[in-house]
Image (cartoon, rainbow, N blue to C red; front, top):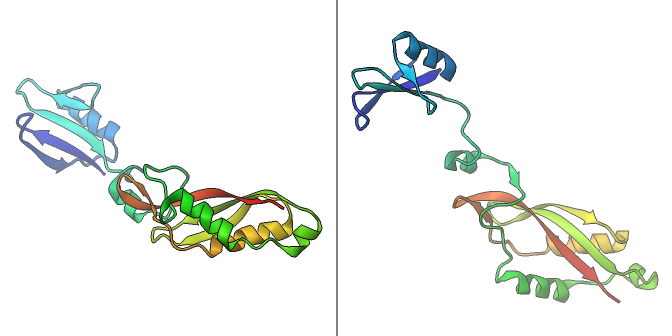
Length: 174
């Protein structure tokens, strides 16, 4: 159902429900009543009254209400998630907790594993995945390190905490 806003002046406005189901039908109704529709969907007649037709649809992805209710995982947000005490502390955590797998040492495997994960609204980490693999033993160690991390500071979109996908490199060097 569409909603027509009808006002006596541009300052005072009241609303009434239009019996039509969308904005175009509501606009047609306005035209039938002798009102002209401008490009911004405003209709007016010679008495100075105006009418604006809007449709009530699903909230836009940018609305606060939508952001609070959605479970969507964002790739980029206004404020990206962060490790407690920042990136320097993140790489220090990785360096101090990495256990180079014996199998990888024996095979002289080294390189950079890219790990993807979701920072949840409460800062916990979920859905840990390997984006760029080097060797199975190194991949498992990179996943173990990420799963052992403390909760992060969650990401925010328009000052609303949201789920965010994040990627980090884990370097293995002999």
